[in-house]
Length: 255
Image 1 (tube, helix red, strand yellow):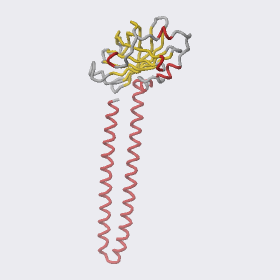
Image 2 (spheres, one colour; image 1 turned 180 degrees about the vertical axis):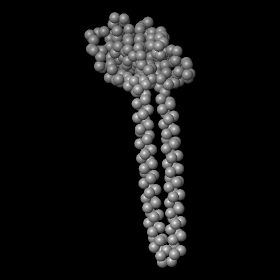
Image 3 (cartoon, rainbow, N blue to C red; image 1 turned 30 degrees about the horizontal axis):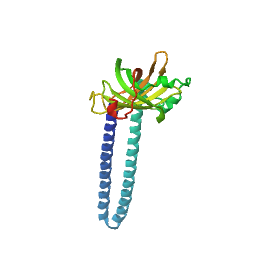
C-alpha cells in the first residue's frame, strides 16, 4: 500500500511538470507567429493584408494552445486512472482477491449479532456474565494469549458491552453489543495511544465478532484488523475466568 501511494505521488508530480512544460512550449510557439505578422506590416498596403493574415494565425495558435492543454489534462487523468487499475490488478494477482477486503468484516457488529441462529430462551444470563475473561488470538503464525480483559454486560442499556484490559500491544477499552437471542457479540477494541508497544500500538481499533460455543464453554469467532501497517483477520477466543459485577464505566476501572 505504501509503495502504491508513493507511485501515486510521483505520477501526480510528473503529470503537473509535464503540463507546465508543455504549456510553456506552446506559449513560445505562439509568440514566434506574432513576430512574423509584424514583419509583414512593412510592405505598405500589401503588408496590411499580411498583417490580417498574421492575426488569423495568432487566433489559430491560441485555439491550438487551449486544445493542447485540455488534451494534456484529460490524458493525465486517464493515465492516472489506468495506473490505479494496474496497481489493483497487480495486488490481486499477487495476494489474491480476498486481500482487497482482508481485515474488514462482512457485516457491521449490529448486523452480525442479529443474523445468528436463535437459541433457546433463558440461556443469556448463563452465557453473558460480567467478569474477567482470558483472550486468545492467532496472528502472523503466532499464538497470542492468554491475556485478561474485564467485560461488563448491561441488558438494561440495550444489551451493551463495556470493558478493557492490557495486552502485548498496549492498553485498550472495549465497547460493543450482544444478542441474548443468538448468543453473539460484536466488539470494538480501542487501543490507547502511548501505551505498550510503540511500534505496534497506533491508537487503532480492532473489530471482534464472536458467538457462544456451548461444547467448549467459550466465545469463538474472528478479529478484524485494518491499519496503515497491517490488514489481518483470524481466530479470536474469549473464555470466562472469574465472575464479578461492575458498577463503574471509567477506563481506569477496566485497565
